[in-house]
Length: 167
Image 1 (tube, rainbow, N blue to C red):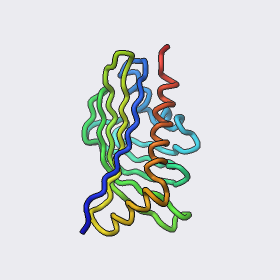
Image 2: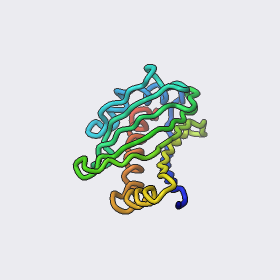
Image 3: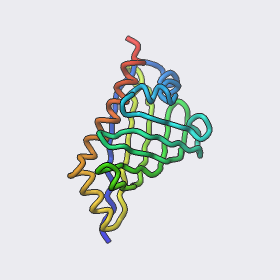
Image 4: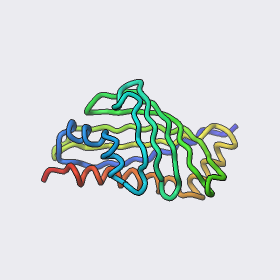
C-alpha cells in the first residue's frame, strides 16, 4: 500500500456585502448556474436548501471534462460556514474512463475590515492504494486537475464578488 494523497485547492476573496446577502444569493441553484452558464448544468439540494445532514447533487464541466458530484452536508451554519463531503466522477476520453474519487469542501464567511472574506476550500482525496497513486498522478500530470479545479472555483467566486460587491 502507498500513502493517502490529498490535494487542497483554496480560493479566497473579499466581498463588500453582508454574509447573509452573499449566502442567500450564492446558495440559490439558478445563481450558481449563472456563475458559469456554459459549465454549470444542475445543482439540486435534497431538502431544497443547504442544511446539516442534507444532500446535494451537481452536474458541471470542470475544465473540458463533464463531472458529477453526489454529496451531503456535514455542517451548515447560515450564513457563516458550510462543510460537505461526497464522491465526484470525471468523464475522460469521451466517457471511456470515469474515475471516481472522494471530494469535500468548506465555504467559510469571515467578517473582515472591508467586508466578508469568502474562503472556498476544495479537497480531492485519492485512495490509499496503487490505483489511488495512478489516479493522483493522472489528476496532477495528465489533466492538470489542480489548475482546472482552482480556475473553476475561482471563476465561481469572482462571479459572486462581481454580482454582490457594494462599492
